[in-house]
Length: 118
Image 1: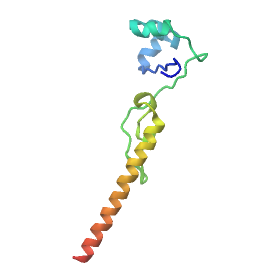
Image 2: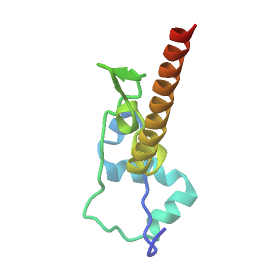
Image 3: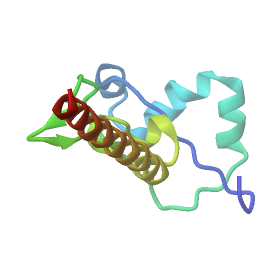
């Protein structure tokens, strides 16, 4: 919460959302069943004219490597609403992957040199 501003993100199955037809009805009839969440909605002022939404996110298992390319960050299936700061996670996962790649090639070169000397 910076400057008394909060961001609310939630996931809903399409089946439950389509019963309500729109975000306003979904909030009134579903989200407001939670008294704490209702209090947040009742005592907050929206900063945008309407909510920002995304839909039909795939949670299926994705390949870790595609065409010899390591999948990191969002391409690996880690999406911002589920895991926090997506950009920071992508950068950090790239850092980890690059170190592991360098270590692998160092090990591979050392193994090759060892085999050549034996």
